[in-house]
Length: 76
Image (cartoon, rainbow, N blue to C red; front, side, top):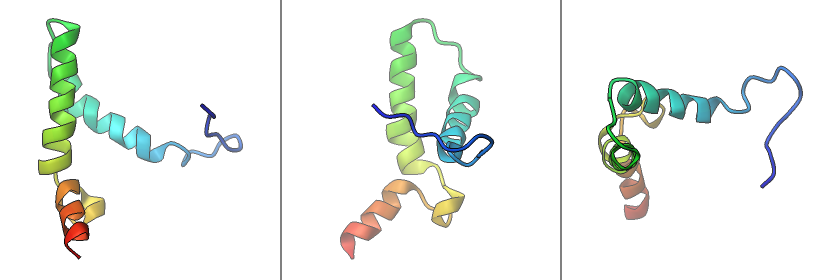
């Protein structure tokens, strides 16, 4: 694996990834209390595959879910 870095002070390197982790933490991890690691794994999987990809509207996608954009792309 090769690290992706640039010059010192470039705050845009990981902006997309930082945004993703912020959404995951504030929408799922912080409000939830997991009883076991397996619970956390299943809830995070459900969040990503069901909610984030199919239901959550993304402003950068014109207020559409990523699955809707993918379906439109495949239909074209």
